[in-house]
Amino acid sequence: MAQDFETIALNIEDGVATLTLNRPDRLNSFTDAMHAEVRSALELIRAGRADGSVRAMVLTGAGRGFCAGQDLSDRSVSAGDAAPDLGVSVEKNYKPLVMALRALDMPVIAAVNGVAAGAGANLALACDLVFAARSASFIQAFCKLGLIPDTGGTWILPRLLGPARAMGLAMLGDKLPADQAEAWGLIWKCVDDDALMPTVSALAKQMAAGPTVGFAQTKKAIWASSTQDFSTQLDMERDMMRACGQSDDYREGVAAFMEKRTPRFTGR
Image (cartoon, rainbow, N blue to C red):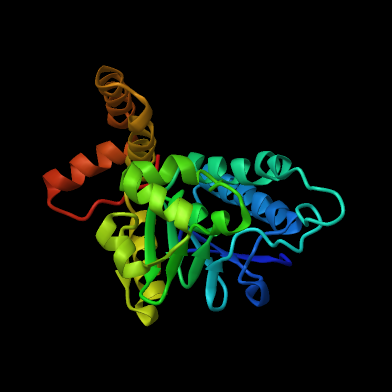
């Protein structure tokens, strides 16, 4: 299944929705129009999860870049005669975008195929698993413009890297190569360029065929853990374990284990 868009591409196949940012001539930088199309695509993906046709998502970019962040020539943020209110853009576009990704009831995998800069870097880091091509890099470019990391950057970076490395990336704007990002624990894995999409596609299909009820609860619990105390987290684990234990996926997993066969999960 494919859906027609102007600035992105959406393909749904084998239970996997692949959303490709598709403005390669501008390194897939965001405009208001692109944000609107991504929102529409995410609505389709949520609908696919409800009817069972989508059980995992891949986010990637077309051409030689993943996403260069905000397109500074876009009228909504262009620093022309009147100073723009960039807070409006954050509230209208970037906050809903990362919140929607985090709330998706399925695994969300970023395939970073090239430079991920500014909001583009933090968009990738908001996904559940991040794979990057060896030639890719991550740049917190905000400081070059007198800005702060947005799209969740000030929340995600210190939690993944600690305050020292987060502060260095945010205040210096240095390019972080993909292999170093993996070594630091910023991303899950760095792979050779020609292996990126085959690796991510195979994993997404594997996860789409897996126990997606449990995956969805796992991602919610891990994301919540940084803002909850230990006792509250244990209570969340109890409640989520109870919900998972009542799912068709759990019944199928146990039956397959007892019968020594491959489970056939339905995501219910």
